Length: 347
Image (cartoon, rainbow, N blue to C red; front, top):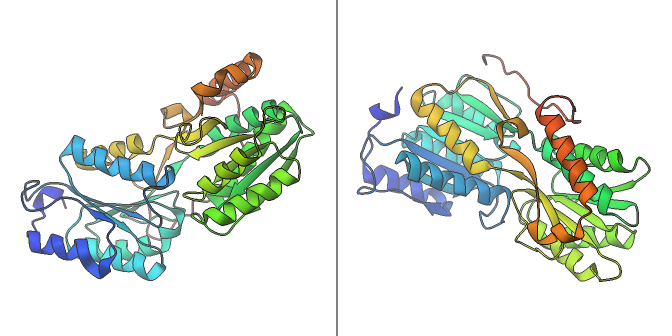
């Protein structure tokens, strides 16, 4: 069904927006867009103020609104019951395209896809697909490998650390790549790893980061959401002129979050990816199954912090640039964890 065939009243939209008090931000309304406008929703399980994974998704939603004239809505949902309720509210209200931004949404997305066959759901880093449930897979491990090279070249203690949120395959994959990148610089480097069991617990992330710093790590990378602020805080507190300590951002360009200690960020251009998906959807060219986006498409990269350039050895920057070209041209294969499953009835 084309999005232009769907008609709904402002009252129906309002019901979707305020159902269960779950909505963090709901945009669009009776006078904001024509009745046949594309309707796009975003689900996140954490706050869009995280300066990372969720913030990038929300920016993508707003870019779709601006570029395609879409009517958009966002809900923050934390539990599987809330996932189901949000999908039901959007499906019942005739939304055309729903971005479910995280691996944790995949089971609820399959249930919703079966119940609302005219609604297309795109799960970021999802491992399961069906006829109308797509997976948007970011090959962040490619940027994370380059980040690991940066860590391997900057460490003076030859110990680096990784602080993760929940130990799901996409997050574990970025850490395997980071470890490989660090050991491409120094095969004998020690790599510490911890998962705190939460994406947003700032205190737990700070505690895990401090523990790794106390074990000698002088470069820390994270793969969390709002909890990243705890990692950056721990690194700031440990940093000194004689014993510099570095942090590395993840999921979004976080270089300006703590510019004095962040060497660079393994980043995804999520807004660009979301707009590309929505544009393909409106054109009827969105492929079934999984859509892989990598360094080759310009969606994933490692972004060096320009504020730190004068403290990073030129030969290290050159090695990272060489590796980037090799990855893009298929000459360097980065470790990854495959997690995409084929669902019965899928493409």
